[in-house]
Length: 380
Image (cartoon, rainbow, N blue to C red; front, side):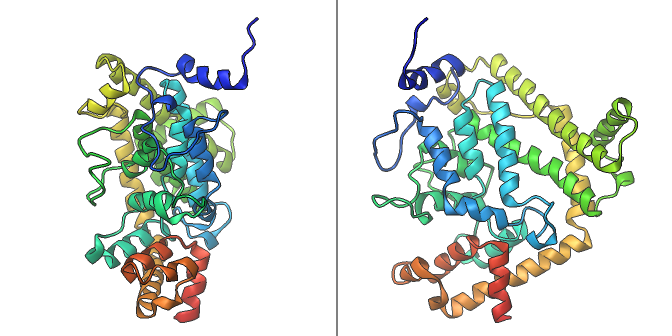
């Protein structure tokens, strides 16, 4: 029997496990600021750990996913959603022979720049920042890891690898400009980045159903109009005819996730094989998306999205939360713009070098729901 040192195991692991089109840590394009790498952790493991230990990651615990934090303890927050995306991403990455550590690092970092109050908060801040290029949470997430986090004495930000940073900024299609010299629009990101984008959708579509039913906003009978839900419900009744509503809901939501993940893995693997993708270079140069749901599953998910949009996101209770969120963001922005010296600590120190509006947007985007509500309550 041959015994390996821990260093040898780390060095040999990826070469034995990963497919040739995966992003190998040994072939990373590197970091902005050079540093000695760890002998027992790959560069993507270090990136994942840096994200987990960041202040922005901890603050996601008190940021809205769909329901504002004070609505109840059982609804998903931005942090629990992020963890679900990471778990789904690892499952997909392993099945496709991709780099789980890279996929996980991107998944854990993809929402670091999200505002309080979910997409309502983002929409409000984007409107306020139009003359300064707007606001987009993916770009803000990159800004968080590149600049806003202060963890090291030798450089700003977390100094993550190119591939993780690319996965953050190319997480989804966006019209806002970013550094195209560093992240060319014509170059596809890694498959690890592409799968995180789909894992994000799988997580929020399925789990918004869970939270919507739990809250009473979504109606069980109306959900039967959605084919993928109805299929999962009938399956649950066939295998477990006697279940209370709570357990049945959990069964169906698990099935929704499993159906999408399984479809994505099989369809993406077929795409990779049929197009003879044999390297990361081939991935980057391929013109079409390789990691995608099948056409039939895509249609089912579109039907689910339409139902959620009509019955949940436009529900009066959700609209009320959205209006309140917009008012809070607008009030805070106006107050800090009127008197920028009310900003805290290092944000205040930036006032002599940068436009106040950009600093204010950074400050507000980093707030938790409860901190934003507390500040608003002092000034309304």
